[in-house]
Length: 234
Image 1 (cartoon, rainbow, N blue to C red):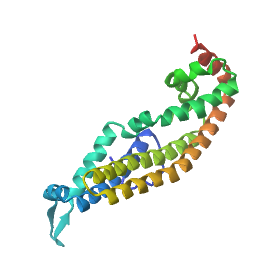
Image 2 (image 1 turned 90 degrees about the horizontal axis):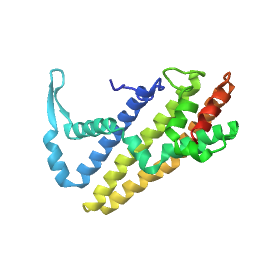
Image 3 (image 1 turned 180 degrees about the vertical axis):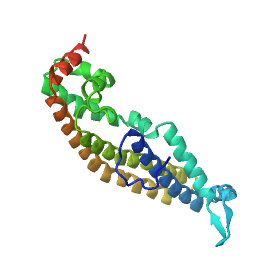
Protein backbone atom coordinates (compact mmCIF):
# COMPACT_ATOMS: atom_id res chain seq x y z
CA UNK A 1 0.00 0.00 0.00
CA UNK A 2 1.35 3.46 -0.90
CA UNK A 3 1.94 5.44 2.32
CA UNK A 4 0.18 8.74 2.89
CA UNK A 5 3.36 10.20 4.33
CA UNK A 6 6.33 9.61 2.01
CA UNK A 7 8.46 11.75 4.35
CA UNK A 8 8.67 8.95 6.91
CA UNK A 9 12.00 7.20 7.23
CA UNK A 10 12.59 4.28 4.90
CA UNK A 11 12.64 0.98 6.78
CA UNK A 12 13.40 -1.48 3.94
CA UNK A 13 13.77 -1.74 0.17
CA UNK A 14 10.01 -1.88 -0.43
CA UNK A 15 9.37 1.30 1.53
CA UNK A 16 12.08 2.95 -0.56
CA UNK A 17 10.17 1.97 -3.71
CA UNK A 18 6.92 3.29 -2.23
CA UNK A 19 8.46 6.70 -1.59
CA UNK A 20 9.75 6.84 -5.15
CA UNK A 21 6.34 6.04 -6.66
CA UNK A 22 4.59 8.67 -4.52
CA UNK A 23 6.89 11.43 -5.76
CA UNK A 24 6.67 10.14 -9.33
CA UNK A 25 2.88 10.44 -9.12
CA UNK A 26 3.19 13.98 -7.75
CA UNK A 27 5.62 14.92 -10.54
CA UNK A 28 3.22 13.36 -13.05
CA UNK A 29 0.33 15.46 -11.70
CA UNK A 30 2.39 18.63 -12.17
CA UNK A 31 3.42 17.50 -15.65
CA UNK A 32 -0.15 16.76 -16.68
CA UNK A 33 -1.21 20.19 -15.42
CA UNK A 34 1.42 21.73 -17.71
CA UNK A 35 0.29 19.65 -20.66
CA UNK A 36 -3.37 20.50 -20.11
CA UNK A 37 -2.59 24.18 -19.66
CA UNK A 38 -0.46 24.63 -22.77
CA UNK A 39 -1.74 21.94 -25.12
CA UNK A 40 -5.51 22.36 -25.72
CA UNK A 41 -5.82 18.98 -27.45
CA UNK A 42 -4.50 17.22 -24.36
CA UNK A 43 -6.86 19.19 -22.13
CA UNK A 44 -9.83 18.29 -24.31
CA UNK A 45 -8.92 14.61 -24.19
CA UNK A 46 -8.25 14.40 -20.45
CA UNK A 47 -11.25 16.55 -19.53
CA UNK A 48 -13.36 13.48 -20.31
CA UNK A 49 -11.91 11.88 -17.18
CA UNK A 50 -12.92 14.76 -14.89
CA UNK A 51 -16.10 14.01 -13.01
CA UNK A 52 -18.33 15.19 -10.15
CA UNK A 53 -18.56 13.06 -7.03
CA UNK A 54 -21.78 13.45 -4.99
CA UNK A 55 -21.02 14.12 -1.31
CA UNK A 56 -24.17 14.42 0.86
CA UNK A 57 -22.68 17.05 3.15
CA UNK A 58 -21.08 19.12 0.38
CA UNK A 59 -23.22 18.54 -2.68
CA UNK A 60 -21.08 17.74 -5.71
CA UNK A 61 -17.33 17.78 -5.40
CA UNK A 62 -15.30 18.03 -8.59
CA UNK A 63 -12.67 15.29 -8.83
CA UNK A 64 -9.88 16.10 -11.30
CA UNK A 65 -9.72 12.60 -12.73
CA UNK A 66 -8.01 13.96 -15.82
CA UNK A 67 -5.01 14.70 -13.62
CA UNK A 68 -5.15 11.89 -11.07
CA UNK A 69 -5.94 8.92 -13.30
CA UNK A 70 -3.06 9.35 -15.80
CA UNK A 71 -0.68 10.42 -13.00
CA UNK A 72 -1.39 7.28 -11.00
CA UNK A 73 -1.14 5.22 -14.18
CA UNK A 74 2.28 6.70 -14.94
CA UNK A 75 3.40 6.13 -11.36
CA UNK A 76 2.34 2.49 -11.43
CA UNK A 77 4.00 1.96 -14.81
CA UNK A 78 7.24 3.58 -13.62
CA UNK A 79 7.13 1.38 -10.52
CA UNK A 80 6.49 -1.78 -12.55
CA UNK A 81 9.51 -1.27 -14.81
CA UNK A 82 11.69 0.19 -12.02
CA UNK A 83 12.12 3.39 -14.02
CA UNK A 84 14.90 4.69 -11.77
CA UNK A 85 16.90 1.52 -12.48
CA UNK A 86 16.42 1.95 -16.23
CA UNK A 87 17.58 5.58 -16.00
CA UNK A 88 20.52 4.45 -13.89
CA UNK A 89 21.46 1.84 -16.50
CA UNK A 90 21.52 4.44 -19.27
CA UNK A 91 23.42 7.07 -17.24
CA UNK A 92 25.54 4.43 -15.43
CA UNK A 93 24.75 6.00 -12.07
CA UNK A 94 24.72 2.91 -9.91
CA UNK A 95 27.53 1.28 -11.90
CA UNK A 96 29.77 4.28 -11.29
CA UNK A 97 28.90 4.46 -7.59
CA UNK A 98 29.41 0.73 -7.03
CA UNK A 99 32.76 0.59 -8.81
CA UNK A 100 34.29 3.98 -7.98
CA UNK A 101 33.07 4.28 -4.39
CA UNK A 102 32.36 0.83 -2.93
CA UNK A 103 34.45 -1.70 -4.86
CA UNK A 104 37.43 0.61 -5.26
CA UNK A 105 37.48 1.07 -1.49
CA UNK A 106 37.45 -2.71 -0.94
CA UNK A 107 40.16 -3.17 -3.56
CA UNK A 108 42.38 -0.61 -1.85
CA UNK A 109 41.79 -1.87 1.68
CA UNK A 110 42.29 -5.52 0.77
CA UNK A 111 45.05 -4.96 -1.80
CA UNK A 112 43.20 -6.75 -4.58
CA UNK A 113 45.50 -7.43 -7.52
CA UNK A 114 43.18 -7.33 -10.53
CA UNK A 115 40.83 -4.38 -9.90
CA UNK A 116 39.59 -4.44 -13.51
CA UNK A 117 38.29 -7.99 -13.02
CA UNK A 118 36.40 -6.86 -9.93
CA UNK A 119 34.87 -3.95 -11.83
CA UNK A 120 33.97 -6.18 -14.78
CA UNK A 121 32.11 -8.54 -12.42
CA UNK A 122 30.40 -5.70 -10.55
CA UNK A 123 27.16 -7.48 -9.63
CA UNK A 124 28.91 -10.56 -8.29
CA UNK A 125 31.58 -8.50 -6.53
CA UNK A 126 28.94 -6.36 -4.83
CA UNK A 127 27.17 -9.47 -3.54
CA UNK A 128 30.43 -10.88 -2.24
CA UNK A 129 31.85 -7.78 -0.58
CA UNK A 130 28.85 -5.65 0.29
CA UNK A 131 25.33 -7.05 0.08
CA UNK A 132 26.22 -10.27 1.92
CA UNK A 133 26.87 -8.08 4.96
CA UNK A 134 24.79 -4.94 4.42
CA UNK A 135 21.39 -6.39 3.49
CA UNK A 136 18.42 -4.61 5.06
CA UNK A 137 16.68 -7.96 5.63
CA UNK A 138 19.62 -9.92 7.05
CA UNK A 139 22.29 -7.45 8.15
CA UNK A 140 25.63 -8.60 9.55
CA UNK A 141 26.47 -5.02 10.61
CA UNK A 142 24.59 -2.27 12.44
CA UNK A 143 21.28 -1.79 10.62
CA UNK A 144 21.11 1.96 11.31
CA UNK A 145 23.69 2.86 8.66
CA UNK A 146 21.96 0.56 6.15
CA UNK A 147 18.60 2.27 6.66
CA UNK A 148 20.15 5.73 6.51
CA UNK A 149 21.76 4.81 3.20
CA UNK A 150 18.44 3.46 1.86
CA UNK A 151 16.68 6.63 2.97
CA UNK A 152 19.17 8.80 1.09
CA UNK A 153 18.96 6.59 -1.99
CA UNK A 154 15.16 6.86 -1.83
CA UNK A 155 15.38 10.66 -1.96
CA UNK A 156 17.92 10.53 -4.75
CA UNK A 157 15.92 8.13 -6.93
CA UNK A 158 12.72 10.09 -6.26
CA UNK A 159 14.54 13.15 -7.57
CA UNK A 160 15.83 11.29 -10.63
CA UNK A 161 12.44 9.83 -11.61
CA UNK A 162 10.70 13.17 -11.06
CA UNK A 163 13.34 14.89 -13.17
CA UNK A 164 12.80 12.38 -15.96
CA UNK A 165 9.00 12.83 -15.91
CA UNK A 166 9.13 16.64 -15.87
CA UNK A 167 11.94 16.83 -18.44
CA UNK A 168 10.03 14.53 -20.80
CA UNK A 169 7.03 16.82 -20.37
CA UNK A 170 9.17 19.82 -21.29
CA UNK A 171 10.36 18.07 -24.44
CA UNK A 172 6.77 17.25 -25.43
CA UNK A 173 5.73 20.86 -24.89
CA UNK A 174 8.65 22.07 -27.01
CA UNK A 175 7.93 19.65 -29.85
CA UNK A 176 4.24 20.55 -29.97
CA UNK A 177 4.65 24.30 -30.15
CA UNK A 178 5.05 25.62 -26.60
CA UNK A 179 8.78 26.23 -26.92
CA UNK A 180 9.27 28.80 -24.17
CA UNK A 181 7.47 26.93 -21.43
CA UNK A 182 8.94 23.63 -22.66
CA UNK A 183 12.53 24.86 -22.52
CA UNK A 184 11.87 26.52 -19.16
CA UNK A 185 10.46 23.26 -17.80
CA UNK A 186 13.50 21.28 -18.90
CA UNK A 187 15.80 23.97 -17.49
CA UNK A 188 14.13 24.13 -14.08
CA UNK A 189 13.98 20.32 -13.75
CA UNK A 190 17.63 19.92 -14.74
CA UNK A 191 18.75 22.74 -12.45
CA UNK A 192 16.97 21.04 -9.55
CA UNK A 193 18.66 17.75 -10.37
CA UNK A 194 22.12 19.31 -10.62
CA UNK A 195 21.61 21.25 -7.39
CA UNK A 196 20.19 18.47 -5.20
CA UNK A 197 21.69 15.23 -6.51
CA UNK A 198 25.26 15.95 -5.25
CA UNK A 199 23.85 16.47 -1.75
CA UNK A 200 22.12 13.09 -1.70
CA UNK A 201 25.02 11.30 -3.37
CA UNK A 202 27.51 12.69 -0.87
CA UNK A 203 25.37 11.29 1.94
CA UNK A 204 25.10 7.96 0.13
CA UNK A 205 28.90 7.87 -0.16
CA UNK A 206 29.26 8.72 3.53
CA UNK A 207 27.01 5.89 4.66
CA UNK A 208 28.60 3.47 2.18
CA UNK A 209 31.97 4.13 3.76
CA UNK A 210 30.51 3.67 7.25
CA UNK A 211 29.13 0.29 6.15
CA UNK A 212 32.44 -0.72 4.57
CA UNK A 213 34.28 0.16 7.79
CA UNK A 214 31.84 -1.99 9.74
CA UNK A 215 32.16 -4.91 7.29
CA UNK A 216 35.95 -4.85 7.43
CA UNK A 217 35.85 -4.90 11.23
CA UNK A 218 33.95 -8.21 11.27
CA UNK A 219 35.97 -11.28 12.20
CA UNK A 220 37.58 -12.98 9.17
CA UNK A 221 35.71 -10.70 6.73
CA UNK A 222 38.89 -9.30 5.18
CA UNK A 223 40.38 -12.68 4.31
CA UNK A 224 37.06 -14.09 3.08
CA UNK A 225 36.24 -11.11 0.87
CA UNK A 226 39.80 -10.81 -0.46
CA UNK A 227 39.90 -14.48 -1.44
CA UNK A 228 36.56 -14.31 -3.27
CA UNK A 229 37.33 -11.03 -5.04
CA UNK A 230 40.72 -12.27 -6.17
CA UNK A 231 39.03 -15.41 -7.53
CA UNK A 232 37.03 -13.23 -9.95
CA UNK A 233 40.14 -12.77 -12.06
CA UNK A 234 40.52 -16.53 -12.62
